[in-house]
Length: 236
Image (tube, rainbow, N blue to C red; front, side):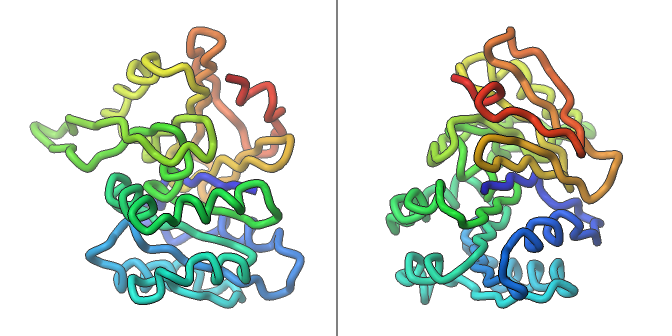
């Protein structure tokens, strides 16, 4: 199972998505491997933020750092859940390729592991997605979003933080790529599980949108509580 979260809102205190996903583990106390490599210069801060997010969820957490990066395969093998945090997507992709973590992660994509990515962590798993490393703000708007080549472990494109009105540029950008694409707002998760796709939310006013690459990239809202056919939606 793969869960792609569009990021956690700056003022968000909810962890309904994490509770729902963690509860899917058969064990009473899931083992979670936390990956903070998208904030390579603020690893301790990322770890602290994650622990605060899931403070009321009973689980066993192993934190990755640069000191134990060589144990990624061992730790992942022993874990029920991999949670890849947000940050700078370009840097996260570089770290995974540099240390050959991409090859290791690929082994676990179609297993019983639950792999969760938030923002940059979600982008990492896709073919190409919208990043903000080079974004700048001017006159109350954001500019210079760029598509980022990722690991292509799931052959789709996403845009996290899609509630930002300036990310409407993604709607046109995806037409350059023949890929099923998704605009994922903060505090929502697109879950891909075997032959189905469904949506989880922390807040009901947030949304996920599917752009059908076989139907002129028609924009289709996805709803929590609905089950969508994976093969139909992710056809390429």
